[in-house]
Length: 151
Image 1 (tube, one colour):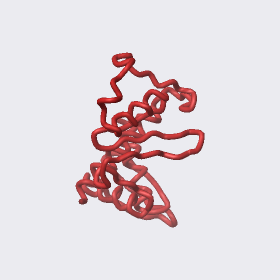
Image 2: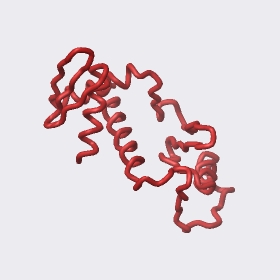
Image 3: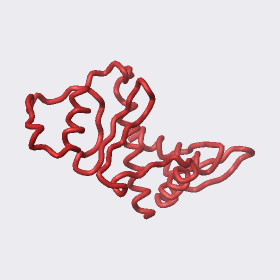
């Protein structure tokens, strides 16, 4: 389970990095481009889940995931991430920041990070990166982000 959390966290950081490197474009105004490969799909022969995925993509939602397992889209108007999954095992949701911080700690410790505190501030040193936070977990999260952005 620890390996799964670490892998998920790294994928989440990569996704955040990709969202933040769009040249400063306003995400609500970005038109999602889809290949015109199948202008008239045979929805009668498709699985219902695949049809839902197709509808979301056709409505110009920024869709992420795989319709064979799970996919999601963010509704900017409501601020809600809609997740569609064929099973609970295909989705992992972090709503508890404690779990997120523990995962960040696990990732940085595995990569050889060291931690210290100065006053009310925690410090994480990961390779040649130094990051600060209110807690060790927050410092670890910031160190991972800094490493990701510097790559």
